[in-house]
Image (cartoon, rainbow, N blue to C red; front, side, top):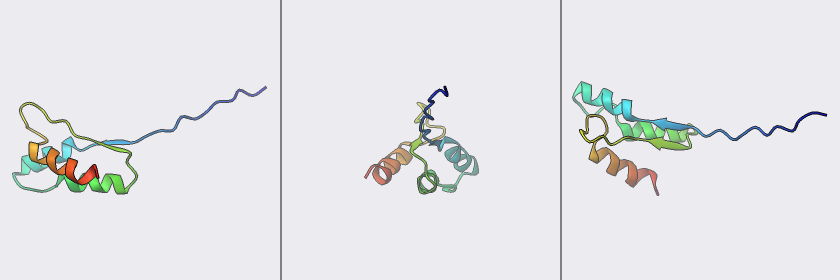
Length: 73
C-alpha cells in the first residue's frame, strides 16, 4: 500500500528590505523598492515583505505608503 502524501502548496514571499538598503547606501532613488515589489509580483510572488524599523535605516515611511497604495488595490 502506497501512502497518500499531499504536497503542500508553497507560497513565495519576497523581502524588499535589501533593495532599500542598496538605494540608501548609494544616496539616490534607485533601485526603487516599489519597482522591485512590482517585478516580484509580476514574476509570481505571493507576497511582499518590508520591515519598517524604528530607526528607518532601510525601508522608509514613504516606501510603506507607496507600497500600500500600489500593491493593495
